[in-house]
Image (cartoon, rainbow over all chains, first blue to last red; front, side, top):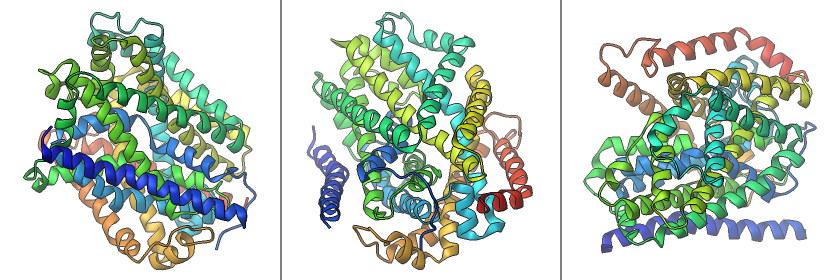
Length: 37
Length: 488
């Protein structure tokens, strides 16, 4: 696999799956805080 | 300000999120995305496709969440509250577009169930000619009808159980199972010998292609059709959100989640095709077939036939496809049922009417692929108009006020900045106008003599005629719709 393809794959996967994971982690933390209060 | 109406609520944020992911993740993620990505330059397509996630999908999902949570009405009541009683017809149009799609989507869900049953029983891969088998199935008459009835019945059963015991419980099973099945398929696909060629094809960018406007327009179209943004479905589920529920973070989660699933499906399809038939791969992966079905129902069974453990993986693939179709179909049935409930019917009676409507109105699509294509073209295009109407509902309220009061409302985990005002006021209407004009222009160029013909399956004329009939009916019935809904 060429470097440019690998780089594109990493960027796209980071944006989408990274974005999803980040949102999920924030949502989990916020939800726990709402439940505590 | 939220309106106080007695409705059932999702029991938790996760119940709501899984149900809305069920709306967003449909067959379009699994069978349309890989084909469109392949036909539009692979890696080059992914860049605008990710851009439009932020410029179309997420802003519209936010708007739908906020409108449903604020008004606690389905599409007709929502537009009456947001824009005034004179505009109930806009909500009725948005609701009708999703309902018209539901009529033939039930047929699509039936195809998926039929292929799952065939693959699970071991009969699918033993077919000698998959193209002929598909043709025979779709023209057999009774078989597509039978599976259409089965799909509609499953969706109606779920909706008959209500929001918590029906929609939420079904999606708590369907969506985690769907995600697991897609992950298993993807892992299998990337570990096939030669699969790396598929990844190379999918992720190699052609920077010159980024200057081609068609790639940007196809990327926007894909976002408009496969995220469920602007359909009115998310608005309907948002009616059942708890008051403490967040809007912006949930919208971002749905957008990222939906496109992540599409990419995973793309990786699965590209790796499978390139690993099994490397010489024909580039050609096969672009094969549209009627309504994008060529790759899924003709080529995928052949590919699995070449693979060790093909029966098992074909069953997993078609089960995932069936779950994706059913979870979306359930939301469409709920949208139509909610509108009738807002008009004063009880759930069971409203559902009986909707169920009868699907069975009858879905019949022509089950019996005739050309009728199916016509409906897919007409109401697929109308989804852009639905997106425009939702943006107009926000604009009427004042985009900045809507953002501050209804998106950054009670329970919000994120604050949405002023960029949202610009996107919803200018970018979304501009995207709709450009996209509809471009698609119509494509049709006019492809068929200069017949583009106006209202009786052709995929013409500008048939689109405009059917939209005009539906709009005339709803504008005429506007007073009845708004007063009946708001007086309940």
